[in-house]
Image (tube, rainbow, N blue to C red; front, side):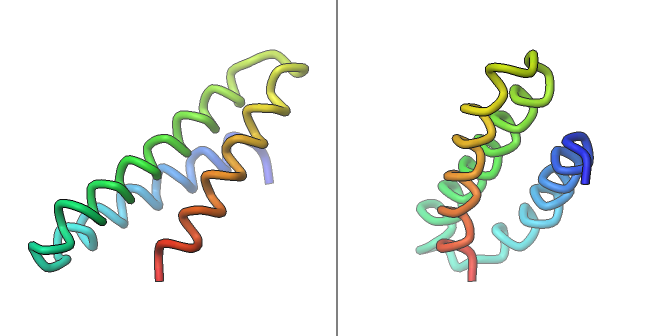
Length: 77
């Protein structure tokens, strides 16, 4: 899987999650839904930055993105 495919998949994940997050109960919508949406956007940003940087600095950016994806896995049932 190429880096561009990963960025596109995370983008598609974001597009699919927004309607699901909007269906959460009001009590959870403003806390959990906003946080998850922000985390997915942060992951997308980290992956995009890693994709468009030169080879050497991309490793720490992918490490950062991997950490964010692991947190998302824990929070999304």
